[in-house]
Length: 120
Image (cartoon, rainbow, N blue to C red; front, side, top):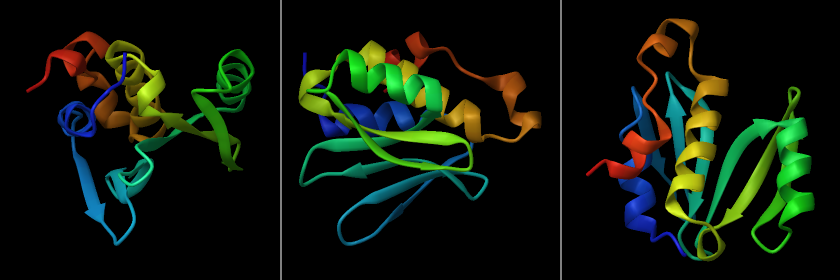
């Protein structure tokens, strides 16, 4: 059931114009300079941008897998514990985070969650 960090990295980098920046404790993922996700290797967790409704639903449904990270600009960021999620669900949430952040002209080339899960 757990998603390995390398597998997450393969799928997130398959997103159009995804760029990553490494810092000492985490990696930030951006599309055209705007962040949509984070990875903390030490805790094997990922932070993803979601709608406020999706953030609340995920945390309420499975608090052992999801937790509130923060809210900003009308969005709710969630922490995802990689040990508790399957690849297809993680790809769907990652794609949603990218979709909520990407400029409109990129949205015509949106991959499917299935293609992200098969990337690499």
